[in-house]
Image (cartoon, rainbow, N blue to C red; front, side, top):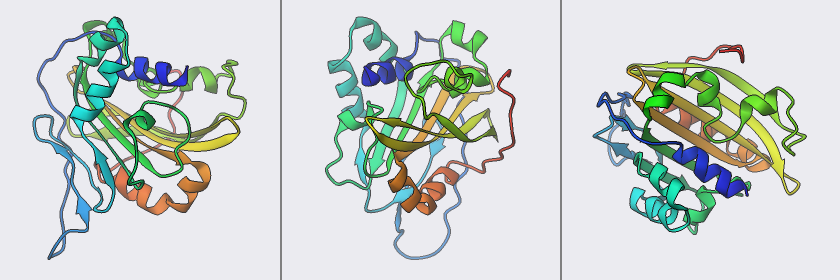
Length: 232
């Protein structure tokens, strides 16, 4: 049930592209061979970095899995995706792990760029951006969705050149295992494009790898955060 919910929320609804891309500036410093990988979508102007020894899952692999495991409606929504990749410290990471909310035991990065539909472009709010993967707004308001230990650890606005949105760090348990999720969701200034950047793993794993996780998140641009009211 959780993987179905995740697929539906990542796919969202149908298509309209206005062509303005997000530009995220990544400054490369130092000499010699880099210790980082720099995944990028040149068409969308999206860049980030991960350690060089992490294992990657390609857009083609992620798209193939979604299309093979979805119904017609979800498949139609998946067609909105322009670029998506995933990375993990686990050399045997499977595509199926990306599309479930079960806590991974190794850090798992997921990045997606997709078009917004006309209705989404008109209606998307900061709460909509929070809720693209998990129903954070309802959980924060105390709605009983079977997640009694849900907690928001940080929540604030992110402003980038060409886009703005919300970064939320939160935690909850599935099958008795708590995980921490660091999620940044941005919408382009022309309201045509959604950018999702998620890093997550079991909370014990997240705590152990917090420094590298924060470095990965920071690599998408300078994050400026402050408290944001949930009425936005």
